[in-house]
Image (tube, rainbow, N blue to C red; front, top):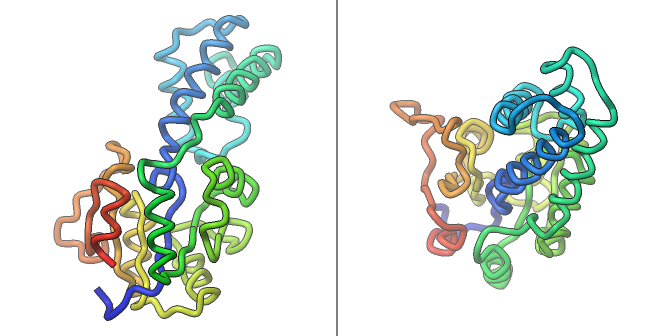
Length: 232
C-alpha cells in the first residue's frame, strides 16, 4: 500500500450494487410476460439468448427484447416487446436495486477518514445516477465518471486518470476496486494504483486466471465490500 491511501475509485455494477441479480430477475419477469403475450419459447431458452445478446451488445443495450425477437422469429412484434419492457421496468423498480451489504456504512467510514471517493463506470450518465440515487449513495462520491464524460470505455485508463485528476490525487496514492480483471484490475495496475478485486461480484464466466500475467494480478482480493476497511 502507499504511505496513505488518499482516494478510492470504485466500479459501479457488481461492486457497489448487485446489478446482475437485478438484471436476472427483471429479465425473467420480462420473458414470462412476453411468453404470455405470444412469444413461442420456454423461459430457459429465451433467458439464455438474452444474456448471450447482452454479452454481444453490452448490458446497457436498450433494444435487447427487439434483438431477442429478431433472433428467435426473424421479425419484431411490438406487442410482445411492450409486454417485456413493462414487466422488466416494473421488476427493476420494485426495490431490487440495492447496494451490497455494508456499502453505505463502509463508504461513510471511508469518508470520515478523509479518503476521497469516486465511481468509474461504462454506464450512461443518467443510468449511473439513477442507480446511485436508488441506493441512496449519490452524495457519497467526490467524482462520478461515466461514458459520456470520458468518451471511452474501460479498460481504457482515461476514465481512471480523469477521476484522479479531478480529485487531485496521484495514481500511487489511489486504490481501484472492481469485479472485472479486464476492466478494473488491468487498467488500475497500468496506471500504478493499488488494485482490489471484488470477488463477491465477479461473474463466473468472466473469471480470469492470473497465471504469470502481472498486469492481471490484483494487489488484494476481498470477499465482502466492508473488507476494504482492512486495506486502508
